[in-house]
Image (cartoon, rainbow, N blue to C red; front, top):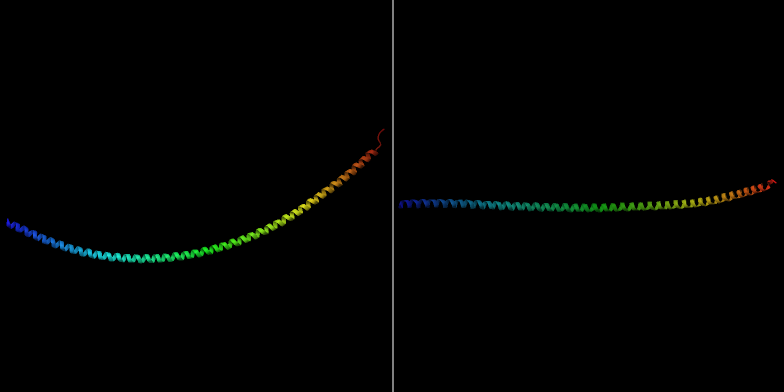
Length: 158
């Protein structure tokens, strides 16, 4: 019986020794691998963030320059456009006002001449009608007087 326990204890001791060596090597290897992995990851992450930050900084610098130039160009264009529009509108209104003033002057002259001519024509027509009526009545009265004299001069039957 003692020999079985001795054999068991030897087996157990060897097994635990082997297990401890295996576990020790495994943990050493794992720790070494994990350390290298984390070192590599940290270097990668640091480089990635550095690269990203440089890219983002350059991108924002480029964007800000573009936006600034775009707004400067737009503002210049808008100012020129408004200046041109205001000049055009001012010239258009000046031309329109001159045209309207000339048109109204011409119309007023035409209307004044038309009314003068109409009044002269109306006055002449009235004078002509009065003259014609006066002559007509004179002729009628003469004819009526002569007719009456003629009728009275004709002998009446007895």
